[in-house]
Length: 373
Image 1 (spheres, rainbow, N blue to C red):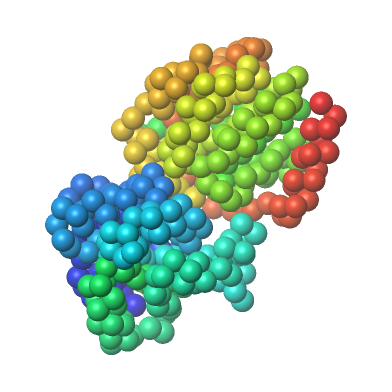
Image 2: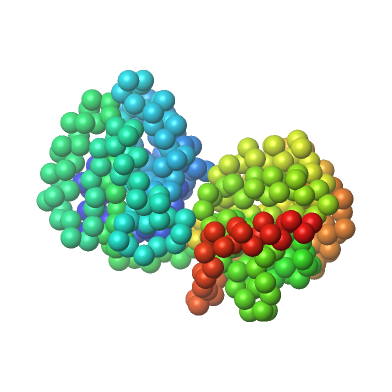
């Protein structure tokens, strides 16, 4: 189905969400049509954030908004869905568009498998009726389903369209870029070189993929690394937990800007506790690159300043290799909490692979390594 026809059938003029690779066509279309426009399209920090934002739109206009997300974001969305939207509370109707990663019978990454199994069941449990859209779905079928859905929406309940892979098409290719020059994989290589045998906790997406391949290409063991392949936004909290209970080890957290924004409250907890053995690195390309490249709000704010406001005793923002070398070496020696925000370009190698070890194996090897410290 062409994305233009889907938007026409939905008949909505306000969209907010968190980008998803399964919804790349929708994200590209919204970028082309609206860009980031507070009246029509807002990319949110997390799925609960966009659900609440959409609720405010409905309260102000009486119109029905559209909220888009990957199915992994259902967990963030559930709290406002049951305690704010539900018709036994405020009865605020929303049309959810959800990318179905880990669909049963389809090959996918380990973090998506269980979520894929329970995607529709979770919606049923929170009283959200759904309809699956695939590449065979006709315009007429969707029109008919939306006619049924509008009756549900008028009663103050929400509905969801579950989007299978390749269900939507958009003829125009959108290119996302920024003005930064540093290449993320080269930055991660220097982190690996300077951190030595220190434990590293890396965030979901291309950062963990590149870290894995750097270890592979150098023939090094993966025991030092915990690859946070799911639970976007929680990498820094995992690193905090490790740092607190392994105080003699230097712990490195390689975070992304989208992930840091998703649960930015974690920075307040990290700054308040202020473990002296934690180095928190945020690679900031102002982009949700792992799912297509749509922009994040991190291009308009200063994460290092946020960290300082949260109590980090040392926080700096850099965008060149000379400063990178200096800051990494000093962080290695420093005995207080440090944050390094690194401005990077968007992009990765075309042949970038994925971790070949199972998540459980990664956990077991990492825990065994931590026992030696």
